Length: 120
Image 1 (cartoon, one colour):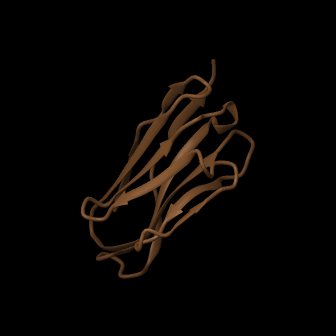
Image 2 (cartoon, helix red, strand yellow):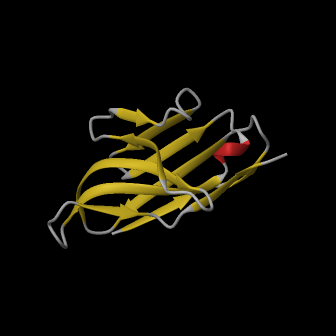
């Protein structure tokens, strides 16, 4: 199983970015998908998660600015980030809690991380 993230970059404060992540490989079922971020010297933190029934959960710091969505047919999860602030600068990691046909044990899988920098 692989998670491939894309869409990071440099943006000015107040700007927007869209992150995408595609899961591929021996996948039987994906339960939750989400995005986390980790800034230098800080712990990895939840940004947003979305369940298989499209229920969502957001960090207080991004609620109202970020929107998470998923395409179950394509095994993808997206994060639309608007009104970006310098404090959103971080490496963003996608995550999927899924059942693989290789292990048949529900497990967490992580993407490689994509850098988001918000700066003027």
